[in-house]
Structure formats: C-alpha cells, structure tokens
Length: 162
Image 1 (cartoon, helix red, strand yellow):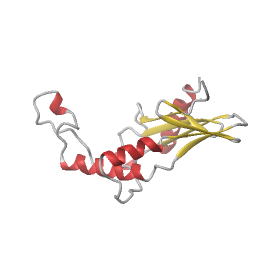
Image 2 (cartoon, rainbow, N blue to C red):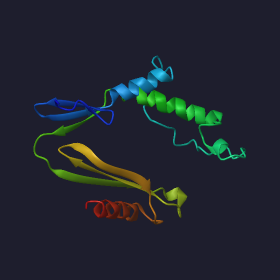
Image 3 (tube, one colour):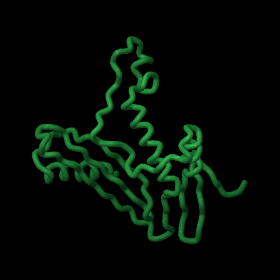
Image 4 (cartoon, rainbow, N blue to C red):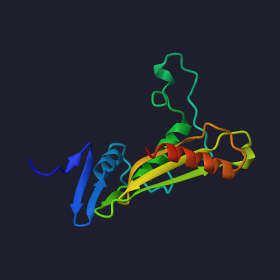
C-alpha cells in the first residue's frame, strides 16, 4: 500500500510546503454531465434578489421536492450555480506544513430595513492556512444592530472552538 491519492472523492496533492486538496475532477464531471463546458462563467453562485420557494401545487410528497417539478426560477438558479461552479474548477485548499496554528474567524450580517428579522452569521476555522470547519446559518436571536449581530456570531464561533 502506498500513500493515499484520493479519499472521499478529494484528490490529495503533496508538495514540500504541505498538502493541497482538489475536487476539480468532480466539478468537471458535473459540468460535462449537464453540458455546461462552453457556458460563460458566473461570478456568484446565486442571485440574492430571487426568492426560491417550492411549488406547493403538487399533492404527493415526491412532487413537493424542488427537483421533481422545478419552475423556471429554479431552472435559472440551477443554471447560474453550474456556471459559477465552472469558474471554481481550479480552486483548492492548501494546508501548510508549519506552523500548524488553529485560527477562527466569524462574521455576521444585519439588515436594518428588515428590522425584526434574523441576521445571518458564519464562522470558519483554519489549521495551517486551510479550512477545517465552517458554518453559515440564520441567527436564532433577533438583533437590533450590526454590533449585536457580530456579538452573536462571535459567541457561536466561541462555542464551536471545543
């Protein structure tokens, strides 16, 4: 048995300064499967001004799934996502050899025009410069300012250090 080259469909590329993880082969396979090889690249994965909801007209549970009966709006979102993926083929995660320092980052969003709604927060932990844990979710509390939203994000990050 030699060194592992692929694990959980991730390619491991070793170098003198660390390990690089790539899933370019997976992205290329998806792009080819749906015929997006010659499509132009999208800079973002989705349009945040478009609200995606299920088509509630179906009677059975299977029909309530997005993929069984997509609307034009869902097809457009899927198209944009695939065009975005095409632009990420060369992206990788690099884990440096040293120093193996654990770092944590948090961020939050608060929209004043939607006062009374939940903000979003997220965090990422890196080790040796590469992401090892991350999360993005709506906050469980309704905050009244950017400062409060950032504090909630920091608290969530802190509780996940362990």
